[in-house]
Amino acid sequence: MAGALKSTSDGATMVLTLSNPDFRNALSPEIYAAGVEALNVAETNPEIRSVVITGEGANFCAGGQLQRLQANREQAQDVQAQSINGLHSWIDSIRTFPKPVIAAVEGAAAGAGFSLALACDFIVAADNAVFVMAYSSVALSPDGGGSWVLSRSLPRALVSELLMCGERIGAARLQAFGLLNRSVPAGDALHEALKLADTLNARAPNALASIKELMNDAQANTLGEQMDAERAHFVRNLHHPNGGEGIAAFLEKRTPRYS
Image (cartoon, rainbow, N blue to C red):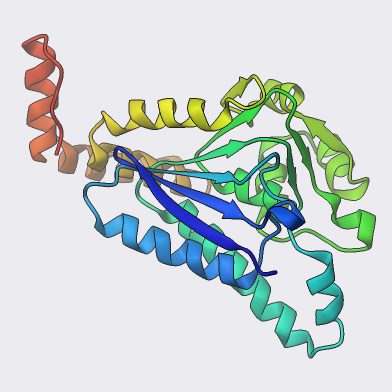
């Protein structure tokens, strides 16, 4: 089965649930396309302030379905290339999506499932969650941008362990290296992710969009380029109605009401 991506709402948060429980929520081209479409809808809907991605049942996502990959070996190489293009389109849409995206991880986040979690702005995980780049265990190499994020976030020796040896890393160790925002008891990841989403939803969406864009561009920019970008965003946000509301609410010691 190809599985599905279920979309529900919790207040101002869109919840996207990977649903392929027979294969531990393994991914498929259908899920990639549904993910891109869901974010396109959420981007233009002002009622949606954030997105949570989670998995159905005991696991977050097992990555690619090996049966499908084995079948693709009998097809032209372009078949698998197009499938990965679909995954990468979804990863890119998460990274550039102007609203916060939170991964709520229970159980295993493996392969492209690990990459999917890393693409999100925040990761909330059960304390017994396990993250693994299992590609080398089946003679494959990473996709989904996982090697890019890990190589920029962790010491090379640890990245070598994760990518070359396919070593598992637990939530506590991942949090110690700064790649995990919250570690919670098993079964509480989605609840905690929604609490975090509520906190973000109460902030000015235009400011969060600016912050995310600045963070995305920071590594490629020189200091001068980054400060130029900061100036442009700051001036634009100061003159946005939310800028006036935020300052007024602070001075009047009341809760702001952002649009």
